[in-house]
Length: 512
Image (cartoon, rainbow, N blue to C red):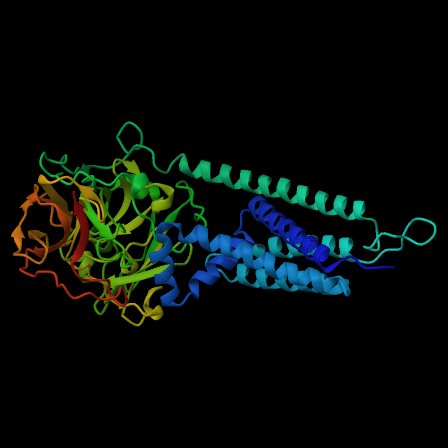
C-alpha cells in the first residue's frame, strides 16, 4: 500500500475543517447558542492588546470584524493543512488534532458571557464530523484491483476526488443551511428593531419630542446634520447580535440601590419618554475621523429610573452590562446632573436598529462610548470605582469625557477645486458644553472666525462655514473649535489611548 501525497492530505484536511465549522454552525443555529467561530472570535477580541485594537480600527474602521473573521478562516485552514500533511503517515494525528480543536472550542464557548453548557455541543459535534471525514480520506487502503497498482495514492485518485468533493459539497450545503437559519432568526428580531415609533405603531407613554431641525443648521454639504441610521458608525465587540425578543427582554437595576428593579420593554414603552438630539463619539475616532454621529435618540431618562431604584450613599459609578457580557462604567453624577442621559429605545424615529443596541442601550451626552454607551442592555449596577469596565484594564482611562473637536468636511482632503470664491465647511462638537466658536486658517495664516450654523443643542454637533477666495496652488487648511466654557482645542497631537485623540484637523487641497 502506498500513501496519498502530503498535498492531498492537506487539501482533505482543509475540506474537513470547512465541514467541521459548517456542522458546528448548523448545530449552533438549531440549538440557538453561540457558534464556535463567533465564540472563539469573541474570546480573541476580549484578549486583543490595545495596540492591535487601535491598529485594526485605524486600518479597517467598521470592517474590522469582517477582517477578523477572514483571518480566523485563514488561520484555521492553515492549521488544518498542516494537520492533514502530518496525518498522511499517521492518520490518528488528524483525528486527535480535530478533537483538540473541538475541546478548545467547547471550553471557550461555555465560558463566554451569558453562555450555557449547551454551547459546548456545536464545536464537539463539528470536530467529530471533521476528524472522522479526514481519517476516512487519508487512511491507507489496499488496492482493490488484481496485481500491482500504478496508482500513486494508495487508493485510486477518483475515489479521493469523489470523497473530498462530497465532503466539500456537504460543507457548502450545511453552511448555507446554518446561514439561512441565522438570517431567519435575525429577520425575526428586525421585525421589531428599526420600526417606526409613532403612536399608531408602538404603544408608548407621553413623549417630550425633539423639535424639528431648524433651517440653517446644515451648512456642510458633505455632512448631514442628522446621521441616517444606516450610515451611523458601529464600533463594538460583538461578532453576532445578541438574541433578545422585546416580549421577553428586561434589564435589572441593582447594586447600591434601595429597591432593585427589573424593567421590561413594555415598562419602558409605558414610561414618560424624551427625544433629544445627541452626538455620540467613539474614543477610537482619529482627529478628523468619521466615528462620530448625530441622531435623535428617544428613551427614558436614566435619572428617573434611578430615582425609582433609589441611589444609596457611597455609590460612585453607574456600571452597565450588555447581553454579550461587555461592560462599561461612568460617574453617577453623569446620570443625575441634568444632562439627558437615557436608556434609549429609539433612534431617528424608529426603534433601535439591531446593530445599534435593540431593544435598549445607554446614551450619555459628553462621554465616550467605551465608558457609557452599552448596547443590548442587560443590567445596571450602582457600585464604587472598584469595578472596571471592559476597556479600562486594557489601558484606557477610567473616565472618558469627550474632547472638544472639529472636522473639515468640505472640501475633501487632497481634492482639487477651481480658483475663486468657495466655502470651507465642517462640524464641531463639545457635548454637554456646546460649541461657541470655530476658527479656520489657511497656510498658517491668521485664524479666521467661521460662521456658525444654528445652535440646536449643547449635546449636538454644530456645523460651520467660512467663505474663502481660493487662489491657485497647494494649500493647507486647519480648524479649531472653542466650547462654551472658553476652552479652545489644543493643536498638540495625542494618540487615541488612553482617553481619545486631540489636535487640529488639517487637510491639503489643490486649487487649479
